[in-house]
Image 1: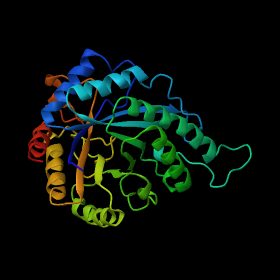
Image 2: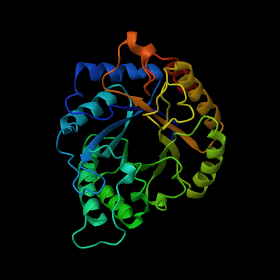
Image 3: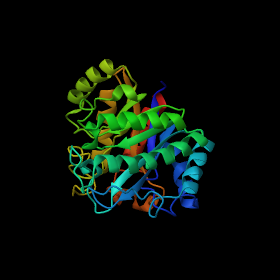
Length: 308
């Protein structure tokens, strides 16, 4: 497959923030980085990790009309699209901790109940992806506890293929790539590549073994680093406290690109992330989040993508 020069757009997909002049401006400005793909990502909520009801039709999740708008806007800009619906917990618990008893117990919430709701959630957006010529569909993100439910994932993928004809990927979490036992069921392997700046070679060596064994295209569905002191060692920790450090973010990207560009099996990035409403140019030097807009890392990415 062609190299994915991508950026994640729109997270977390709060209702009313897409299909606005600010959102259109944001997507247009994303072209500054020389992207050819975007992952249009949004979240839907369940109450807590043991809830079995995903409330994807309710606020704060973006509406279907907003999602269609974003897909069409990206296509107007000649970007390929990966549609990425993600489940989150309303109480703030990370989705990786969604979990139930291995064996069903009467009166207790179960994996069966949860996957029934998750199936409705994913199939709803798979149909939207099909109807709008979306080039890739992501069936899940960082579901660490759920990853071991191989039978349920295989059944879900089979049902997605009944309504969506494009390639399917699953975004596993960092360090979980070797643990997923059902990579053969998807078309493309992807993960969240939030690896410490001094661990890139070590992890890529391990991932190379996996990629060659599985025989599927591999890319990082998420990768990036906040612009804060210390974040290059903790790139996955959005809550890490540190002073603004734009150079540390740029250095992280340089090292990441240097380590991946020699790997022939590696197929690119959907960098994290580019919000639907950008901060002002005046605020760029004080922004400590993942977004690289108007920061030194933006030029690092643009230069790298221009050469791929």
